Length: 385
Image 1 (tube, rainbow, N blue to C red):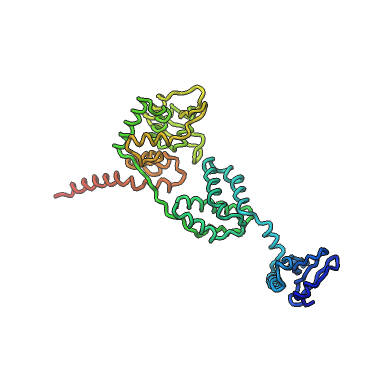
Image 2 (cartoon, rainbow, N blue to C red):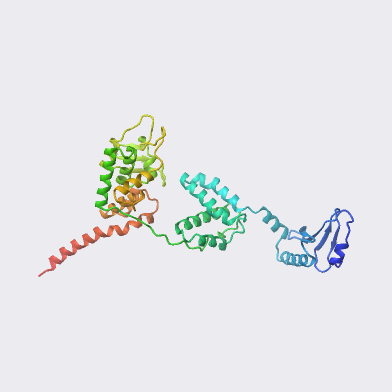
């Protein structure tokens, strides 16, 4: 029949499957329920030759004109081989970003990453990613959505890049898990912000001042012995802070002068100990009820926070711009200054990627320059008349 607003308003239910089909758009119908409720539907034949019916929406919320527009668009989609009902079902079953985040944490991060990295991921999800994407579906997230979040965090480029990397990993897994089509990661072609590496290296005079403060703190007991030991080991080994804080006496191999760490940021690792570090360890009290070298306040625990003590010590040494991690940088800078290869420095520091060690390449220029000058002088002397 020729559906009109007047006719639709006048329709009364006849019971059963009561549909009034439209003459203007083939497949469009108005279904009248026994309760009197009316709703627009669209009926079509799929590619599998099955008759399918999809609900457009209730009359009132949808006008006849709007229903005809939607039905006509669906007719075009069907003619192009698409299935509107299947698409609607897929949309209804689409996974929200919040579910992807939870699956990422439980099936990937907590299984393959270090606890500290998992905590960082949780914080970035809670503070940045989930508030931005809200209840969006995984399939809906576009490059523009990600780009807006990245741009919003432009004042903190390091944090912005870490968030971008996390989103990229999540959506790579979404493709692997079949939640998005392949090669549709929305992070593609979004460039990272430039990050300024604020590396700080201690000079010979600064090392001397720091040593004097540590000796004074030990003599006067103004700092706990575990704090003094931890800082000295950081200086002498170039190890990461967490590697020293969590080290146990069982890891110490006096015969080969090293710490054998069963786990670290890059897996199992050997930290070599120079003679002075061995002296530090032999001078450190070993508690019978605590397996850790750097003991904490609680029985059996290791020291957790070294920052407060370090701020006090560096202030006395007039090194207030020096971070604990800069002790590791200083270890590497001395190695580079001695002409030790970047490959060897990377091995000593436990770097898994060569580019991580490459930041120290410029520090090796001084001994090379000195060697070049010596060679040049010899050649010059030989070529003199």
